[in-house]
Length: 180
Image 1 (cartoon, helix red, strand yellow):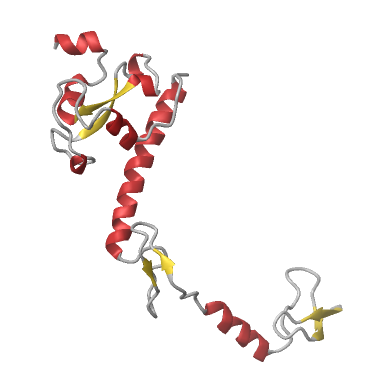
Image 2: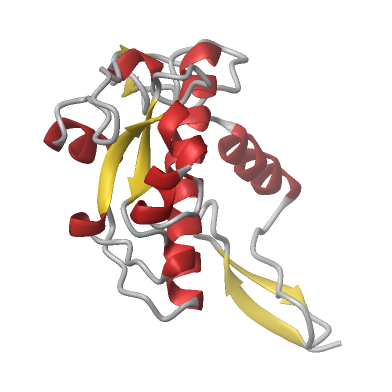
């Protein structure tokens, strides 16, 4: 086996090592350097950080596996919120792309604020705290001309609708929806 000269990545000492010519060559000069390197790699950064959900500052407790959230509750809320918004946005984008229709990214909250948190079909108030629930007055994004009927996912074709009206309307175009 050929011998090569290598610098230790732990103590920077130069040493000769046997290397088979394939795989990674040896990186540490002794068992002591190998153990020191392993101890250092197992340490976690426990410096204070901001919670990714509520933005409060927290420090990791010893033995804690939380890295991005200050509590389990913040982690659950963040996952729910992220899944709900990303999933619906990806679904609209995918459906518009499949039908070769125009697509613009739309913020649901900005849309609901634009429409005054009220249903544009029946006029009932759709409070923000009901967003994402199954309550009949919950605000939902509605396409005036549905994607299935050739409508686009753009700001001029979307509106705030209560869940009740959105379910009743379904994928019908506006003249057909009013007849039923």
